[in-house]
Amino acid sequence: MILIKLGGSIITNKAKPLSPRIGAINKISNQIKKISEPVILVHGGGSFGHYWSVKYNMHTKPDKYSPRGVSIVKNSMIQLDKIILDSLIKSKLNPYCLPPTDFMSGNRPITKKVKEIAKIAQAGLIPVSYGDALWYGAKKSYILSGDKIMSILAKILRPRLSIFVLNVDGLYSDFKTKKLIHEMDGDQVSIEDIPMDVTGGMRRKVEEATRISKMGLEVFFVNGNKPERITSAAKGKFEGTRFRGA
Image (cartoon, rainbow, N blue to C red):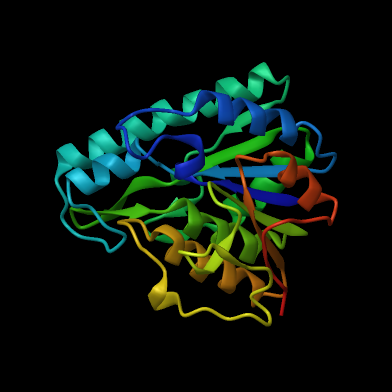
Protein backbone atom coordinates (compact mmCIF):
# COMPACT_ATOMS: atom_id res chain seq x y z
CA MET A 1 0.00 0.00 0.00
CA ILE A 2 1.16 3.54 -0.82
CA LEU A 3 0.16 6.78 0.93
CA ILE A 4 0.35 9.88 -1.26
CA LYS A 5 0.01 13.45 0.00
CA LEU A 6 -0.68 16.13 -2.60
CA GLY A 7 0.61 19.41 -1.19
CA GLY A 8 -1.54 22.51 -1.47
CA SER A 9 1.24 24.29 -3.36
CA ILE A 10 1.15 21.75 -6.21
CA ILE A 11 -2.64 21.42 -6.60
CA THR A 12 -3.39 25.15 -6.21
CA ASN A 13 -1.78 28.49 -6.97
CA LYS A 14 -1.08 29.70 -3.43
CA ALA A 15 -0.52 33.28 -4.66
CA LYS A 16 -4.12 33.55 -5.89
CA PRO A 17 -7.06 32.69 -3.61
CA LEU A 18 -9.31 29.80 -4.69
CA SER A 19 -7.27 28.92 -7.77
CA PRO A 20 -6.78 25.20 -8.54
CA ARG A 21 -3.97 24.04 -10.84
CA ILE A 22 -6.19 21.82 -12.96
CA GLY A 23 -3.44 20.84 -15.40
CA ALA A 24 -1.11 19.68 -12.62
CA ILE A 25 -3.93 17.79 -10.89
CA ASN A 26 -4.87 15.96 -14.10
CA LYS A 27 -1.25 14.97 -14.83
CA ILE A 28 -0.87 13.61 -11.30
CA SER A 29 -4.12 11.64 -11.65
CA ASN A 30 -2.82 10.06 -14.85
CA GLN A 31 0.37 8.99 -13.06
CA ILE A 32 -1.51 7.54 -10.09
CA LYS A 33 -3.40 5.38 -12.58
CA LYS A 34 -0.09 3.65 -13.40
CA ILE A 35 0.43 2.46 -9.80
CA SER A 36 -0.64 -1.17 -9.53
CA GLU A 37 -1.03 -1.46 -5.75
CA PRO A 38 -3.59 0.03 -3.32
CA VAL A 39 -3.28 3.82 -2.96
CA ILE A 40 -4.60 6.21 -0.31
CA LEU A 41 -4.59 9.92 -1.19
CA VAL A 42 -4.47 12.92 1.14
CA HIS A 43 -4.40 16.52 -0.05
CA GLY A 44 -3.72 19.91 1.48
CA GLY A 45 -5.72 23.14 1.29
CA GLY A 46 -3.45 25.49 -0.64
CA SER A 47 -5.25 28.62 -1.80
CA PHE A 48 -8.57 27.17 -0.63
CA GLY A 49 -8.57 26.02 3.03
CA HIS A 50 -5.15 27.50 3.80
CA TYR A 51 -6.20 30.90 2.48
CA TRP A 52 -9.27 31.01 4.72
CA SER A 53 -7.52 29.60 7.78
CA VAL A 54 -5.03 32.51 7.55
CA LYS A 55 -7.84 35.01 7.05
CA TYR A 56 -9.71 33.76 10.14
CA ASN A 57 -6.52 33.23 12.20
CA MET A 58 -7.13 29.52 12.73
CA HIS A 59 -4.37 27.12 13.80
CA THR A 60 -3.64 23.50 14.62
CA LYS A 61 -4.10 24.15 18.36
CA PRO A 62 -7.74 23.66 19.50
CA ASP A 63 -9.34 26.99 20.41
CA LYS A 64 -12.61 28.91 20.17
CA TYR A 65 -12.17 30.03 16.57
CA SER A 66 -14.77 31.94 14.59
CA PRO A 67 -17.73 29.67 13.66
CA ARG A 68 -17.86 31.60 10.38
CA GLY A 69 -14.21 30.72 9.72
CA VAL A 70 -14.76 27.03 10.51
CA SER A 71 -17.73 26.94 8.14
CA ILE A 72 -15.90 28.67 5.29
CA VAL A 73 -12.72 26.58 5.64
CA LYS A 74 -14.78 23.36 5.55
CA ASN A 75 -16.80 24.53 2.56
CA SER A 76 -13.68 25.51 0.60
CA MET A 77 -12.05 22.13 1.31
CA ILE A 78 -15.13 20.35 -0.04
CA GLN A 79 -14.83 22.49 -3.20
CA LEU A 80 -11.16 21.60 -3.65
CA ASP A 81 -11.77 17.94 -2.86
CA LYS A 82 -14.48 17.81 -5.55
CA ILE A 83 -11.94 19.08 -8.10
CA ILE A 84 -9.51 16.30 -7.11
CA LEU A 85 -12.26 13.65 -7.22
CA ASP A 86 -13.45 14.82 -10.65
CA SER A 87 -9.90 14.60 -12.00
CA LEU A 88 -9.46 11.05 -10.69
CA ILE A 89 -12.82 10.02 -12.19
CA LYS A 90 -11.76 11.57 -15.50
CA SER A 91 -8.62 9.38 -15.38
CA LYS A 92 -10.91 6.34 -14.97
CA LEU A 93 -9.90 5.82 -11.35
CA ASN A 94 -12.35 5.10 -8.51
CA PRO A 95 -11.95 7.75 -5.80
CA TYR A 96 -13.77 7.37 -2.48
CA CYS A 97 -14.28 10.68 -0.66
CA LEU A 98 -13.19 10.30 2.96
CA PRO A 99 -13.54 13.47 5.11
CA PRO A 100 -11.32 13.30 8.20
CA THR A 101 -14.43 13.32 10.39
CA ASP A 102 -14.95 9.73 9.16
CA PHE A 103 -11.96 8.54 11.19
CA MET A 104 -11.23 11.27 13.77
CA SER A 105 -12.87 12.04 17.12
CA GLY A 106 -11.74 15.41 18.39
CA ASN A 107 -8.02 15.33 17.58
CA ARG A 108 -7.59 11.57 18.01
CA PRO A 109 -7.89 8.88 15.33
CA ILE A 110 -10.47 6.12 15.67
CA THR A 111 -8.25 3.08 15.05
CA LYS A 112 -11.08 0.82 13.89
CA LYS A 113 -12.18 3.43 11.33
CA VAL A 114 -8.61 3.97 10.09
CA LYS A 115 -8.21 0.23 9.53
CA GLU A 116 -11.36 0.32 7.38
CA ILE A 117 -9.55 2.74 5.05
CA ALA A 118 -7.08 -0.02 4.14
CA LYS A 119 -9.98 -2.36 3.29
CA ILE A 120 -11.49 0.32 1.06
CA ALA A 121 -8.16 0.75 -0.77
CA GLN A 122 -7.72 -3.01 -1.18
CA ALA A 123 -11.21 -3.24 -2.72
CA GLY A 124 -10.12 -1.20 -5.76
CA LEU A 125 -11.21 2.23 -4.52
CA ILE A 126 -8.89 5.16 -3.76
CA PRO A 127 -9.72 6.75 -0.40
CA VAL A 128 -9.25 10.52 -0.67
CA SER A 129 -8.95 12.56 2.53
CA TYR A 130 -7.81 16.11 3.17
CA GLY A 131 -6.75 18.70 5.73
CA ASP A 132 -9.75 20.37 7.30
CA ALA A 133 -11.23 22.45 10.12
CA LEU A 134 -12.50 19.97 12.70
CA TRP A 135 -14.76 20.19 15.74
CA TYR A 136 -12.82 19.48 18.92
CA GLY A 137 -15.45 19.88 21.64
CA ALA A 138 -16.22 22.49 24.32
CA LYS A 139 -16.95 25.04 21.56
CA LYS A 140 -13.42 24.58 20.25
CA SER A 141 -12.20 23.62 16.77
CA TYR A 142 -8.80 23.20 15.13
CA ILE A 143 -7.03 22.77 11.80
CA LEU A 144 -6.02 19.19 11.06
CA SER A 145 -3.31 19.39 8.39
CA GLY A 146 -3.01 16.87 5.58
CA ASP A 147 0.58 16.26 6.72
CA LYS A 148 -0.65 15.23 10.16
CA ILE A 149 -3.18 12.89 8.54
CA MET A 150 -0.27 11.20 6.76
CA SER A 151 1.48 10.26 10.01
CA ILE A 152 -1.82 9.23 11.62
CA LEU A 153 -2.57 6.83 8.75
CA ALA A 154 1.04 5.61 8.50
CA LYS A 155 1.18 4.69 12.19
CA ILE A 156 -1.90 2.47 11.99
CA LEU A 157 -1.76 1.18 8.40
CA ARG A 158 2.03 0.70 7.98
CA PRO A 159 2.21 1.52 4.24
CA ARG A 160 5.10 0.27 2.12
CA LEU A 161 5.82 3.85 1.11
CA SER A 162 4.64 7.39 1.88
CA ILE A 163 5.09 10.03 -0.83
CA PHE A 164 4.78 13.79 -0.24
CA VAL A 165 4.19 15.56 -3.57
CA LEU A 166 5.58 19.12 -3.50
CA ASN A 167 6.12 21.99 -5.93
CA VAL A 168 9.91 21.71 -5.48
CA ASP A 169 12.38 18.87 -6.03
CA GLY A 170 12.55 18.01 -2.33
CA LEU A 171 14.12 19.45 0.78
CA TYR A 172 16.88 22.02 0.32
CA SER A 173 19.71 22.61 2.78
CA ASP A 174 20.32 25.94 1.02
CA PHE A 175 17.39 27.71 -0.63
CA LYS A 176 19.56 30.17 -2.56
CA THR A 177 21.67 27.52 -4.31
CA LYS A 178 18.80 24.98 -4.24
CA LYS A 179 21.15 22.38 -2.82
CA LEU A 180 19.01 19.27 -2.49
CA ILE A 181 19.16 16.98 0.53
CA HIS A 182 19.01 13.50 -1.06
CA GLU A 183 18.74 11.60 2.22
CA MET A 184 17.70 12.83 5.64
CA ASP A 185 19.50 9.79 7.00
CA GLY A 186 22.96 11.26 6.48
CA ASP A 187 22.48 14.89 5.42
CA GLN A 188 20.83 16.85 8.18
CA VAL A 189 19.05 20.19 8.22
CA SER A 190 17.77 22.26 11.13
CA ILE A 191 13.96 22.25 11.13
CA GLU A 192 14.10 25.80 12.56
CA ASP A 193 15.64 26.97 9.26
CA ILE A 194 12.67 25.77 7.21
CA PRO A 195 10.00 28.36 6.24
CA MET A 196 6.61 27.85 7.85
CA ASP A 197 2.97 28.72 7.15
CA VAL A 198 -0.18 28.45 9.29
CA THR A 199 -0.61 24.68 8.89
CA GLY A 200 3.11 24.05 9.18
CA GLY A 201 4.32 24.39 5.60
CA MET A 202 7.61 22.65 4.84
CA ARG A 203 8.50 22.40 8.51
CA ARG A 204 5.35 20.39 9.20
CA LYS A 205 6.12 18.09 6.29
CA VAL A 206 9.62 17.44 7.59
CA GLU A 207 8.34 16.81 11.11
CA GLU A 208 5.66 14.36 9.97
CA ALA A 209 7.95 12.65 7.44
CA THR A 210 10.58 12.23 10.17
CA ARG A 211 7.91 10.82 12.48
CA ILE A 212 6.87 8.30 9.81
CA SER A 213 10.47 7.28 9.06
CA LYS A 214 11.07 6.66 12.78
CA MET A 215 8.28 4.07 12.55
CA GLY A 216 10.61 2.17 10.21
CA LEU A 217 8.73 3.33 7.10
CA GLU A 218 10.11 4.86 3.88
CA VAL A 219 9.15 8.41 2.94
CA PHE A 220 9.90 10.31 -0.30
CA PHE A 221 9.53 14.01 -1.13
CA VAL A 222 9.03 14.41 -4.90
CA ASN A 223 8.27 17.25 -7.31
CA GLY A 224 4.67 17.15 -8.55
CA ASN A 225 5.58 19.39 -11.49
CA LYS A 226 7.37 16.26 -12.75
CA PRO A 227 4.53 13.82 -11.93
CA GLU A 228 6.32 10.82 -13.45
CA ARG A 229 8.51 10.97 -10.32
CA ILE A 230 5.51 9.72 -8.31
CA THR A 231 5.33 6.46 -10.27
CA SER A 232 9.12 6.19 -10.33
CA ALA A 233 9.17 6.45 -6.53
CA ALA A 234 6.54 3.72 -6.33
CA LYS A 235 8.95 1.52 -8.31
CA GLY A 236 11.88 2.34 -6.03
CA LYS A 237 13.56 4.80 -8.41
CA PHE A 238 13.36 8.19 -6.85
CA GLU A 239 14.49 11.75 -7.51
CA GLY A 240 13.98 13.97 -4.49
CA THR A 241 14.53 13.67 -0.76
CA ARG A 242 14.34 10.30 0.91
CA PHE A 243 13.63 9.75 4.60
CA ARG A 244 15.02 6.30 5.22
CA GLY A 245 12.96 4.12 7.56
CA ALA A 246 14.77 3.82 10.89
